[in-house]
Length: 411
Image 1: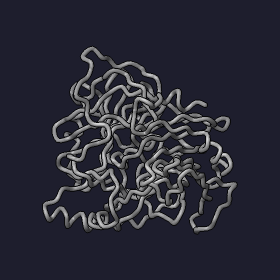
Image 2: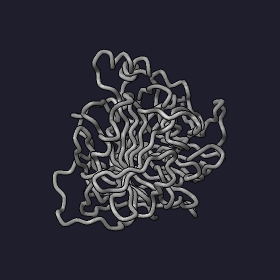
Image 3: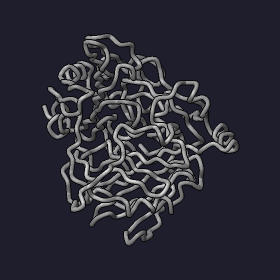
Image 4: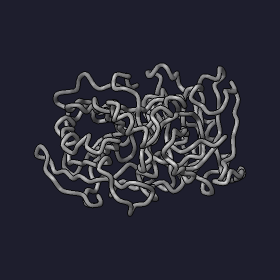
């Protein structure tokens, strides 16, 4: 799955119960509804309404900069901290400012990287739920042009991925240009528009990567409705601000009791869903989640997060822990309920093709969802239910009760 396809998936129109990432809706010039199931899940734990802009179907992120993120920029960092090869699921940097750009604290960690949202003073960023009316007001490309003509800010979806040493391969960036910024090796490239890799690139879709330590790279991905901003020079301003901080294990608000044989944890979200789904809804108020895959995903040769890489996740499942109010299903306090996945024609694929299972807290305020990663190659529904029932949720409002991911994700 390429970046544009991932963005399509998280902004796809919502069916009554469940969908897969293959159900990509290409009519992007209207307000659409996004599933919590993320890039490849058949599940639907929650609802976020986002708008899409132009041929590159992206979540037009429309919450203002002064809306606080769940994990804000750092106010201090250890002066003597140095980069080192930290263990997976560990945060090694904190948020910082670079001119008009503002990197938040990372909220996604994996076996290969960490990801943080990037906001801009000159753009709107919508990574929290919108009503359908709010999304309709943002609209698609025509509405974006109207907003620009009216002097309103363009939209931006941007994130910084900090890769572990040896993971990122700059030589694989298509049509990349090698540059040097602040004494660091760097490469920059434009990203394609539309649903096919051979489509033309768009000046508003940029990738800027740099070597922050020996054989270790960071990359900022910027998808803007304004082709000129942020510029590559703006993105290059992030280079000097990226500094190491004290290594901090990523925490999740749950522990697992059962994982099917052969499945390994791939990525997590803390105060967010795992992967780019968590970045697309960073301020939605989710508690946490994890993605498992079988076999293990590659930890070398990457140029983008796993969500956007073809073949990186062939067989997997997701665990989401979210507020009950973020669910697409009506609360059923104390209940466990499973749903089958529907194919692209709306036909029930049957329990053998997985789907998703919800386990509601006794008061209905928290829901655990476990969902398969795709139609036809996912876990049977009985397995999803067994995983879901084995999840133990901590006090979601008290992070001191949360568990480091490396411990929480092993039964």
